[in-house]
Image (tube, rainbow, N blue to C red; front, side, top):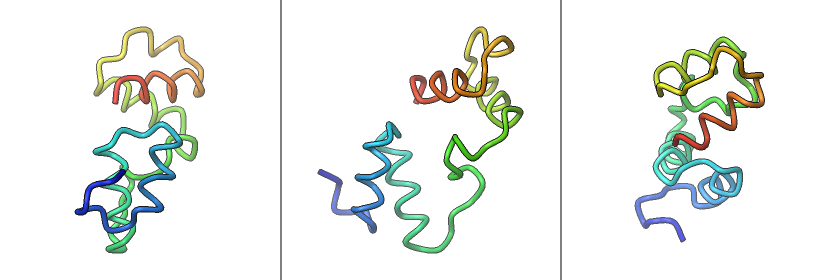
Length: 80
C-alpha cells in the first residue's frame, strides 16, 4: 500500500496499476492533489513520439531511433 505521505491514494494505486514506478506514482498523485501537475506528469500515451524519444535519450535507452511510439513507452516504463 502507498506511504502515508501520498495525498491521493486512489490516483497513486491507479498509476501503479498502469505500470508507473512508486516514486513517479507518488509524485503525480501528490502533484494532482496540490493542483501542480506539470508536463513531466503527462501520461506517456498522451506524449508525442518526439517527446518520448527525448525522454528515451535522457534515459540512455539503446535502439530508441528504430522504436515505434508503443515501443518507446514500453522501454521508458521498463527503465523507470
